[in-house]
Length: 397
Image 1 (tube, rainbow, N blue to C red):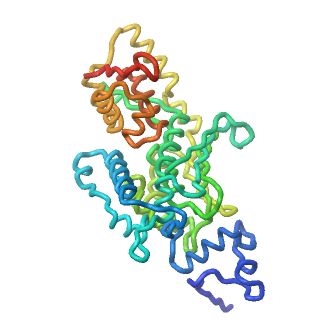
Image 2 (image 1 turned 30 degrees about the vertical axis):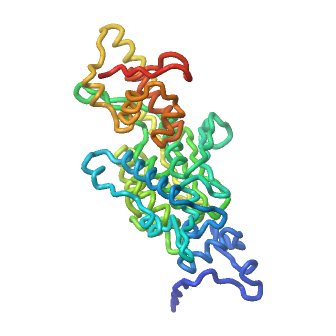
Image 3 (image 1 turned 180 degrees about the vertical axis):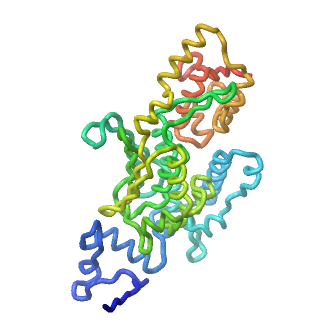
């Protein structure tokens, strides 16, 4: 037997000359050969020329020096917010126009600075700005909706809002370590964040579909538009191989600490699920999309965890019978950097509304609501008066 292996070429797409590039380009999808859709053809052309859609100039958008400075400030603020230690914060450098040019968020043409598609996506100004669709379903299929939301705006804000949505919907329990309570979610939340961040950073923005984040009884499912790039396989990805589809957004997300490093995400997700005692996630390339399934706790694991509803009632019963409360020192130690950011603003301007807090922090309103709701439950803050004419009272020192 003679085996001949022919390496694939780089000058894609290849097509039937008699039919022309539009009608004669075919791709393999889900084990079938089909004519390439318009967005697939555009992506193949860009890939063959070693170009990236997000680095292409956005023709119908203009940008000023003030606009560039604003984006740079917002990106640094996000990087600082997502960094925990002071030593790490000190290492975060300013973003400048030249940095954005090197990433591909901006481009220079005939001496003029122009925005690219990445700039449009990061500022929520794309002509067809994508959204993230989130939903909770009853059972293990899409027959019955329980809840659904759609998030718009800059892609990094969509990603954060979708992540907070999942946190609100999955089960949360607690464990006591020493004298402190530690919240524990049923899924490894760093991996949940990584799944959603990767779907935003690596999706095809030429395809008209949207990212979908779906929560079922047995799994969390994140689906992003766009089949795997040439030379990328699920096996390679599980071993840490990465090939960015959107180079500029990948650079921006890495700077803002939304993703850590190209190629590290999927091995880390697998490792964290294993440490949680969860089944290995599924990675599926199907029908032109890419999907990750992270499976929820089994019945045995659920029995070992104390979920929020049960622990809350037990905590209330214990508090009412013993009249003991958490000391201010203990409460202060349990605050996160995001909690402290909210509290700092409320100390300075207690009359701020949720929308005003979101503007000051550069967050989405949904994210502000999440942290305020959490701190109200922890008796750290309370609202005095109405939502528009009242003020926030901080209950700890």
